Length: 266
Image 1: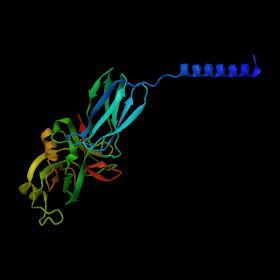
Image 2: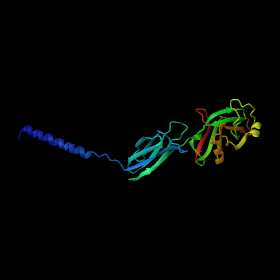
Image 3: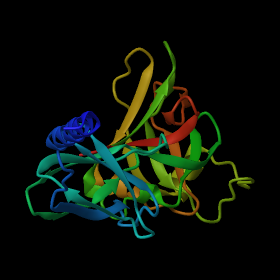
Image 4: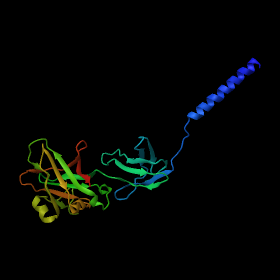
């Protein structure tokens, strides 16, 4: 056999062997046959339009994203049998990150909605009237919980004094009448005047003070509903602690000096 032809045969067979070896090492890419679809929305059922939601495998830790449409709908397909977690991560300190576990079997199409929860009931405006009275309005959307008041364990407010003091968060809560102008009340809003002319809603007493940390908790469902009713003129908090000389506005975020109440869910 001609030497050049022999060499060519050797090279040809070497290429074939190498190609077969490479093919044997490749695992074909395969997709699962299951899916997860759902809607990302707030507790009042309003959709989270164009938000991004994450799906991660609890087994491998790998994750993918989908961007919701205008109605908050998302869709993940080609999924293997596995345990997954749907996650909505918020860049706002006002909203919790939501985690929803989902178990997927083979050839299964699952519908799973994800709810976004606010972690605070933030103030729209506040006004200190005196050492015994302050007015507060909440944001009109009411943290987007709709009528789901039974999902809330309590609303809590805080104030850190850092030591011994004569302040209190204990208060009688009244509804501010629509004819009261916050910028120019036009009358001396004393405790006695408010007691006689404002609608009383409820009382709230602060928890035992530890290391200068004052806290109130609004736990009764009817009182929670009153706070979420969002009257246009807000609420009056009137000091009801005879041992204290000043009432303070509760905070929900000290770094941003935001007033309001933190939401704790059941």
